[in-house]
Length: 181
Image 1 (cartoon, rainbow, N blue to C red):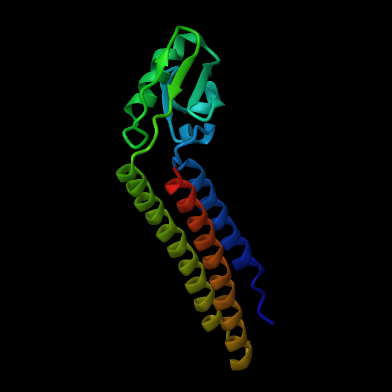
Image 2 (cartoon, rainbow, N blue to C red):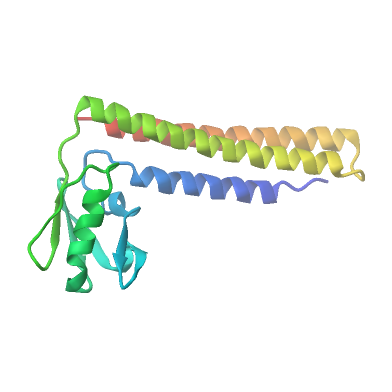
């Protein structure tokens, strides 16, 4: 019998990566994960923001970044400011950085949905690649009979559809969240 647990695990990992990417997509409300992609030049190398500072959401429109080392405050502020995809303008008072989250315009919301849909397509491509690798493995498995191969191929297609549906559901939910004013 052909075991699809390896493919299921790979598809679950692809879904997890997709969900992590969706967390970074801006929805109009302040969320610490919005700054997860920021890299700060500190101590002579680029480091993720969460390794040089603590990020919290003070309320729905403000993020507060508290650096572990006050000497990195300027580098953190400029790293946030330089990320054009976020379009944020941080202000520091020497101890903490306040990042106001401006309300999204209708045009900006549509751009964000378009960016998120590109991430959906990347996730679906990852699922299709896993499916293709599994099919190649089936074709190469000479010890399996044709009906077992057909059954396994159907299981793999059903698994791919299941995870594609999960991605579509997550995207629809995120789109609704982005478009809600």
